[in-house]
Image (tube, rainbow, N blue to C red; front, side, top):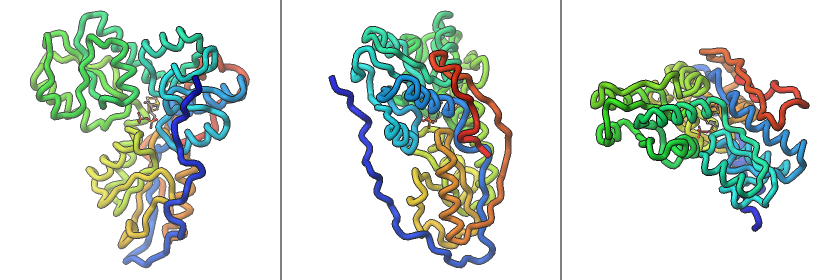
Length: 347
Ligand code: 0O3
Ligand code: SF4
């Protein structure tokens, strides 16, 4: 069977062909640049995993689902010889397949093995941690309320570890209606890339109904998601406009737009590429806040800043709320012959 690549329009047609114009506003124009932003340790590891698999085994290397939810990253890896598929049954028998950073359920691992595929698991270790929690609580006969978005790959993977025990709670409203078998054997876990504030609201509403609800052993919303939200909150307080670089299917990127609006930005938009910024967004705007999701290479932010500089937003102030230096080792199949680091950092 031939593989079905994720369909991408190639080459990409620019959205706006004219450069942004430098239109005067009252006062000085300025950019507030959030830090941390961009690549997290799990994304860095996953992207290097595909690159290194290509170096080592040669093209094509198959990848189940988008390795991370960023269209630019997917395009770049496709150009290097990666083939993105929806399911492992699209991969030729015996070939190498990389599982995406969002994780897979045991059913996917089994299907790949049955097909004789050589699987390389790029699941972020912090997602794997949540999988382990699900397995452990299911073994102890708990019902697991998994706060997260139904249909998101990470939620499918985590729920797949214990399908009989997991109930997905999509939002605070669902906390008021979710049905529970035994309120004394109940724990909540979550997707790693949610809004911290909204998740806490969901949990508060769950606990109001089920006081014995247990917390996860440690935060499931990961350090990178939390740090990017803290930074954009600070930026949003002083920004007329916030621009978030990130793809539409990137949960953590979309959350950054919501958080910016909740914390005072007068307007906030998500873009994949800098040419999506519209001239009218800048009308009367003195201060532009910028951030990017955990799956976004910083080169896109640098391009955005160059375009904004042409429109008079040349002064840039970094708003840093945390330092990050976490790195994960590569999947065991690929350890050994290429130094790590120096890519996609937040600063
Ligand atoms: O989970 P999300 O849609 O935010 O995924 P991204 O954009 O690929 O970001 C990386 C997060 C991840 C791989 C799982 O936590
Ligand atoms: Fe891992 Fe967090 Fe990055 Fe997801 S956002 S890949 S959990 S570090």
